[in-house]
Amino acid sequence: MPITKVNEDELLDRLTEVFRTYGYEGASLSLISKATGLQRASLYHRFPGGKEDMAKAVLERAGQWLTSRVLAPLSGQGKPVDRIRHMAKELHAFYAGGKHCCLLDSLSFGSDDNDIRHHVQQGMSVWVDELAKVAREGGVTAKKARMYAQDAISHIQGTLVVARVMKDYGPFERMLTELPTTLLRK
Amino acid sequence: MPITKVNEDELLDRLTEVFRTYGYEGASLSLISKATGLQRASLYHRFPGGKEDMAKAVLERAGQWLTSRVLAPLSGQGKPVDRIRHMAKELHAFYAGGKHCCLLDSLSFGSDDNDIRHHVQQGMSVWVDELAKVAREGGVTAKKARMYAQDAISHIQGTLVVARVMKDYGPFERMLTELPTTLLRK
DNA sequence: GTCTATAATAGGATAGAC
DNA sequence: GTCTATCCTATTATAGAC
Image (tube, rainbow over all chains, first blue to last red; front, top):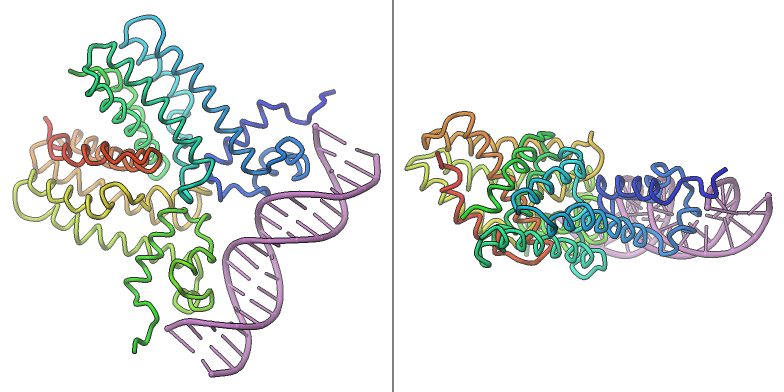
């Protein structure tokens, strides 16, 4: 007999799914309630701050995932090219081959000065920095490394937009394949 | 003495601004009313179908803009490389150097089977096709031309996401500069 | 920890005067 | 064509029982 109807991990999975798909404003408590199987009041028990708390928890968890599964290996042992290949494999799983949107996209609409957007910016910033670092270790000059890192994030985000709009996952797959080469080109 | 408080063009400009920034769900009638200076009832007089009508009109107009200012010159006279350069210049203006989001991104969230998303897909599809055409004319094989066109759209969308999140417009600018080369590379 | 019930507010949309 | 006033519904949020 479980103490909670749905455990923390599964709850956050389902919350993530809703925020990814509908964006912050589109993710109504009705949708969230349906997706999680919990009534409004139960959701407020878990997230006293309401929807904003939920979105922050979702972002926090995605950040942890990125850090442990992608960024840590990226700054770890082995040849830079192999570490980038590893990242590509992890990203393929994370975004379900392009079928999942990126929270950094779906949660970055709305007014400039909101708390969620600050979290989003932080997440993307860390990612760019780590990518630039591995490119430098691969022999790319500091200036180019930063540009390539930004371009890589741009390409990831862009192919995910195309995937969502066109239901064409080819560009995303291709981008991942080419990532080791494009990030380390001289 | 004007018959209308705001003319059609300016009205659509302001509607575009709101939908771009806040997305479909985030664009409440209160926000729209404030941004346009028109009361709810006046908006319904102009757009009997309500918010959905407004979003469709905004997409329609953006599509016309794209067609006349970008796609027509793209399939016009002159060397392919010059036509692409021209597109880059127009896109720079259209997206205000990266400061404006793309409607194809902000309006593509939500449930799969909604009318708006179909319009969005249509718009992106035409754009990809035209880009592929000019790449072919530039001597790129049909298969590669399609891939390069998808990549170009991906890169445009991705740099706009990065611009929105990071407030860094460098990647967008760079992408436009490199567009003629990347689209026509052998 | 989850529920039903309910309050309070914001959202989309309409009627009718000017 | 625009307005004020109003309606209905959906949304966020809370109270209190179990």
